[in-house]
Image (cartoon, rainbow, N blue to C red; front, side, top):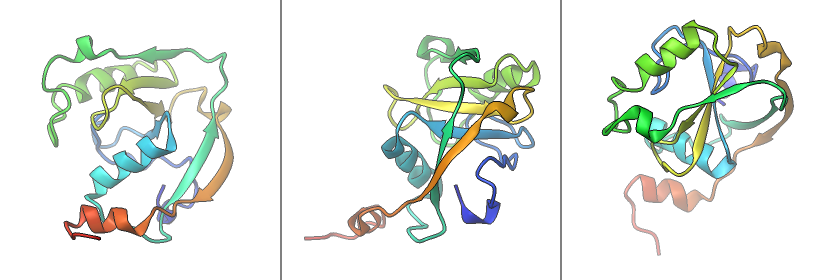
Length: 151
């Protein structure tokens, strides 16, 4: 999460792979490394500083979730900057308030999952922020992403 949003559970409604602009969702991942990779891809490698934190949240197990499988998405769903196959599916889920959480495959690592959390769902207040920790990656990662060769 970026520090300018202050509240780690704030959903600004910025368009993403799984939501059209104005749809207020939070994106999460099943691991910190995946969340980091997703963030770096989205930001194209910029932002290695103290502006970003890791928000650890807890979602009660008793809440229903919906999971989208690769077969439901069709080929090409994970193309960079082409959300034409994913947004309609997720927008329908969002608008119908089907579940608080939509589990989706990661476009970065399709064997891993991301979690789209509907911030307008009636159960959104059941999410708890457990911790907010620094994101301090190895500086060599930034150099690699910027195309610099490191020895």
